[in-house]
Length: 245
Image 1 (cartoon, rainbow, N blue to C red):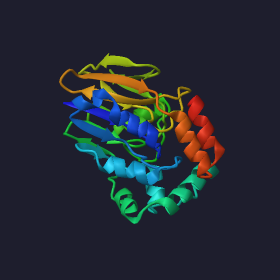
Image 2: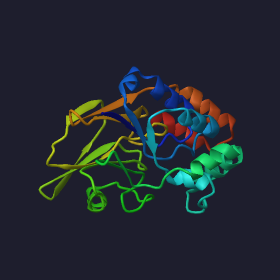
Image 3: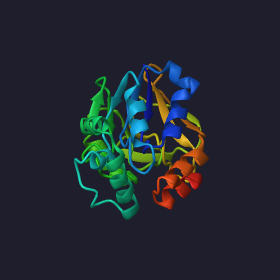
Image 4: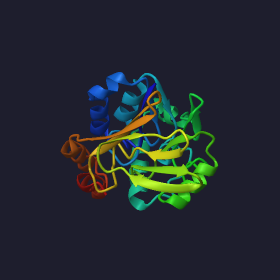
């Protein structure tokens, strides 16, 4: 089976459309989405509608999905995130709001051997930014391979003989996975990369070869920025897309 794992679209329609137009997606058996369809960007409805048109998907919710579908308050968000969440609530159609509300809470085990979660395996909103936090997440993971999002930083944490290490993923890379090692992997973000690289990123996992392929691609950033500014959303949400921070 070939899985495409992606996360944190954040209403960036141009980045999402470019992903689905890539030739490599033709060979994918199942798409695994790690949460945050919406928030920040100017196209919440079109992004959700495009996602709903996909086949062979398994998905979970993110913290922005919860807030924008009114499952939680935006009071704990920073001012920029809260503004964009409240703006998105107004723009969202009733049907798409219902869809967001019904997204599953992570973690979810896919095909009996892969775990997907948004933040961590013990708390869907918890940020895994370090080896210490990855260790805690692995304690609650029931499979040997897991994928998470939320941080927008692509990285592989791997645990062997009770030792845990990390490999940042900065550029296209192919890695063979060891059957005697446990992995917690972040594919980065489709809609708002934050690792100082503005290109969107995703991962393909080939379960037969036990191999992951990390890939990045460019999209029409200028068009996305123009939409954000025209919508009256905070300037930071447009400017950060150029630098990937």
